Image (tube, rainbow over all chains, first blue to last red):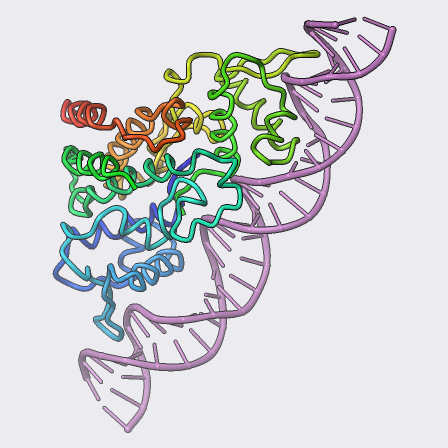
Length: 155
Length: 155
DNA sequence: CGGATTGAGGACCATTTTAGTCCTGTATAA
DNA sequence: TTATACAGGACTAAAATGGTCCTCAATCCG
């Protein structure tokens, strides 16, 4: 179904919740209540986001989580990558890309380009966009053009 | 990892193989040999592509598979959808979209827009592009603009 | 100082999805 | 009429996913 995992979905919702109140730190329990999801699961998600450097955490009483940087500087692909790892259409569009079938495949280069375009698209969507309650106007015009140029530069 | 399933990957490779020789029908065994994948798996993939209307099949001796329409009229999203079902970033960006958390979510509308942009991007990549052995120049400029307009039209 | 609060880390399990195989049936060409 | 080749679906093994829980560590506050 080419979709985000459920945890990624949770992550986005929780990040958006934090982004809407960026001043105070938010405890996991508080966030779980706010978004109506089980505490342990939300907690797990938050830890992953901290490890990815998207959130800062503060232990102890009055502690909690807050954004590591402004919502406008956190992109959808940051969140996705934090939970699921790198975005790549195919196994071989990943960094190492050691597909022993490359010889008979003949499609991998092109999939890599498509992956890049998808990543660029997701990179152009920020947490600030996601957190907006009024639907976003997708600002995807220019970034995609630059992808096209990059691919035209060839490799 | 937000990636295509392995079967989808196979499907693309096999489709590309057929697209490069669109005249004769191709038996499953022949294709499996050409792309160096196990016959039963390739066969399963081919059946899914037929059911999705992307391939035509001919039984009996000298039978096999051929494209249902020109490679330039088959898009990457057609292939992906044939194997994995609809492309949607989140559960609730699907057709029915009955997410009981919608009230506390506040992100679903925006994810739906992102899904649409991804779909449009994938729709702009054709099998003819994928089958090219020289890397494609991604023709994604105009389609994405039209997505932006669609989202600006609101809903 | 000491207890309450809150996150960190990881083990663990149940469930679902995915990949892959195989068997039986049917259409078609020679 | 026989060999070829696809159709449909049952079935299994392996992996990913979602979710819970427990113990430890840091921090605040009285």
